[in-house]
Length: 92
Image (cartoon, rainbow, N blue to C red; front, side, top):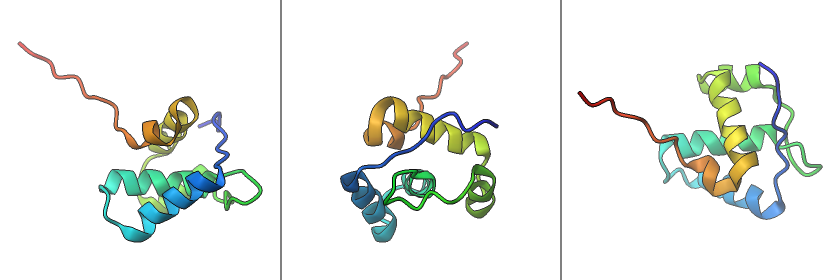
């Protein structure tokens, strides 16, 4: 899967995400999203040394999940990345 969305976190965003991971008081999906963004951070202060395949293996998630989190962050910022997409319910 192509790496279309590059992540560049500000110092403030990096602190917020670090706190989410360290405290562990958010939902699992928010913590995983935080780990994804921290792992893919391309800014000079970031630690974006891991590729999608390695993150996928370490967190036991799909590469598609990683790309979705990155896309949501790039398109809508940190709050948008933490939100899960609404699911549609088929009604009969």
